[in-house]
Amino acid sequence: MTANRRFKQRVRARSAKTGESYTAALRHFRTASGGAEVSEQRTGANSRTGMVDVSVGADVGGGVGSGGNGAGGKRIRVAVAQTSLIDDPRDVAGLRAAGEQVRGLMREAAGAGARLVLFPEGAMCAPNKRLMSSVPDEVGPSDWSRFAWDVLQEELTAVARLAGELRLWTVLGAVHQLTAPNRPHNSLYVISDRGEVASRYDERLLSKTKVTYMYAPGATTVTFDVDGVRFGCLLGMEVHYPELFAAYEQQGVDCVLFGTTGTDPSKQTKAFATEAQGLAAANSLCVAFAAPASLGAIAPSGLLGPDGTWLARCAASTDPAVVVGDLDDGAADVEIAVRYARPWRREARGGLYEEHRVVADPRSEARSTF
Image (cartoon, rainbow, N blue to C red; front, side, top):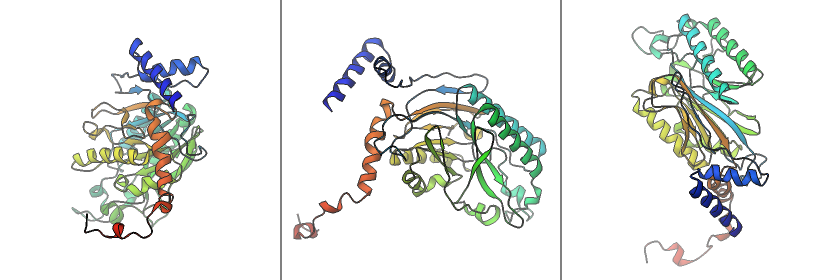
């Protein structure tokens, strides 16, 4: 501990002397000693797309294969997008435009070096419950024959093809058609960097309207690994359920990918982002938060670190955009969350306290005296 403290003092001294960030100074020492280079914080904006490139420490250790010690070694660049959503699945031109928008942002993310990009729930189309209703002037069971399924399939195929060309893992929200008369799933497609559908996550804890009139709920978690980093998927309103995030932590997930369309009134979506921050910190997990551009002024899409801080975030704007950040579990700014907080919580939840409990003591059992 003494050696580690002295090393940190040296890093801080260099930072104060040169004006570098702490992470940049740390990189100097690690590079000089042949160690792994730690990313330095950078920010920049593209005036046309609103894309911001932020390279900072993030991600977590303690996952599968890490031994729970949070040692460095997991690094990946992740992009998170906010898109303009269409709500009429009969609108062929709108579906085409949604596909073009997604592919444009994919190119921006790949150009910034991202290995994975997350899009919001319903990025290809977020069907309006009233437009889908089979009951005139009321919200009722959805008539899914109104969906231009063939056009959706063509656009998804084009997205997958581009993912393979760009070598970019792409996770995006879309409706997944089932065999009639079953309702579809509300889903996140996980498309690999080979342009193949690697998996699909179906929203499990749906809103009352969704489960009553629109979708069939999913039944399982979904995890996948990219470059040694494990991701898990959540969707819609599932940020309201802490147990879902805790379950992914137990599965060794490093970053939860959460896509939503938000709610109306929109200030509730701001609460979604706040909840995501708390759940990232409570579980020492990174969280990618993707919301629609229409709510970007109050709840921009972004990337949360394992201590609940925003590591990268789109500008507060209603324009479509993508933000890019580096997840690095060896970075100094996540050391406490990675090396100490997550492993300690696991130990504490694993029966650590049992041998220390007092078996019988009247002063422990009496709760109405000093």
